[in-house]
Image (cartoon, rainbow, N blue to C red; front, side, top):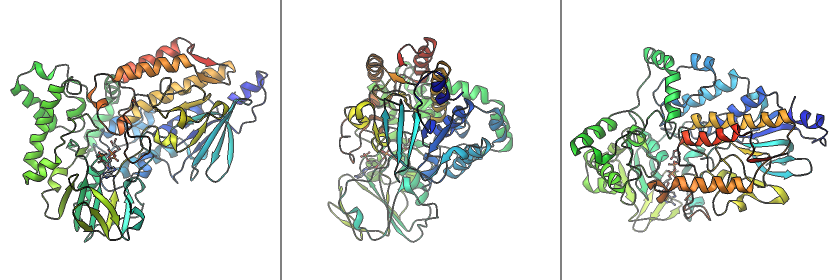
Length: 545
Ligand code: NA7
């Protein structure tokens, strides 16, 4: 029985909704949410802006785009058949392989028939009378739904820099997020990249292989560490497949759902020699180990953080030939790991190429001009400008949809001083809106977190359906308690003291200049304990009606 049918059999007013659930987004979260809700027999429609599935992995097709999490830890775990049949080609899959994987998932589970592509949701308004949401697409089409599920990702609202003259440039220009599907050649071209975040680090390294001349405009350097990608052969894939249960169990035990777990020791417990050996080992190993599998206190203890930062600085000095350039690439305003660590495959060596120039903050960009870029002390001519300038993260995608709850209250207004949620899933005054990977949820290795989050949302909807419940809302007390807990869990963590997308700072967006607590920092195991406890308690902390 669908939710709408349950409501009718319950004597409720006919909700006259088109769907039991509308899901916004056909990325990693939306696809799995659709799969689960279909299992409940619900009428579901997914609205997706793109013309294909994949979300992040549909849009970000810039050169060098790839996982920083091990491919086999990033895969969905919910279907044994899927695990059995899919072979990963690379330890850290590139965008094309991941997009292929997500298309395979969509085909295998016949998901496309409920996905409406090229359909951007412009707004959604809750109607108390019908206990349903009125969803409006950009082209004006409207749909009614009992539940509105946001599966819009955390990095889906790209931002351009607020630099005068962007429109005046006469050459080619791209934001990395909106990279074209057609191949782009850099051969013989003078190319500029603005930004040095995780995206830029990947793109710069790839572009440098074929470019005529590359100029990188860096405002803030980031601490990068080697990815150590490699191909996965048949034997290795067989071994990986045989150990999926252990792999997923290990991910679920770690704070970020990564395969790497923090070392139990403090940096100060071991001798400088032992420390050096451990860090050398981590630096030589694939993936996020140096960040997520390091001594337990590198992200809480300033002295420990200074030591690991110095270790990485030494590596940068060793790898970059020109000392002045090396110094420019070493962050001075934040410690290692306090921002998202870009993983790289020869990034630092790019700056040893004679055709690559680094322009740093000392000569900031003043203006984009028709022929290129003007800084405070020079003018550069370019054929192409690439904006790797990041995203209005976490709440940004919500802000771009006009979401209105009870009495027309706007979600954007409600969150103007920072998000307030219950478990990162529900918001007071926005009944029947459920967020998958919303603000205040625990981030990390995305699909691991997504599977838990989606299962939790699905469990709640099943509970509602089985009891004829047609209205689900967070309580004021629940939101206050969770928001306080999220803030408390962030205390003492060095990355919450630094400007980055993870703390909601984006100098290119009005009102996003100050740090906010945007995500749950208590780690996934504790996050799950909280969410599980709510279920065990029969959802009594929610207002159900
Ligand atoms: P990030 O990490 O937010 O990086 C954006 C970069 O763009 C960063 O270096 C910014 O410098 C730079 N930026 C932004 N605006 C400007 C202007 N106006 N002038 C110069 N430089 C600018 O985004 P990414 O796309 O690299 O990565 C996002 C996440 O995607 C990543 O962490 C992965 O999880 C995947 P700033 O640091 O603000 O000084």
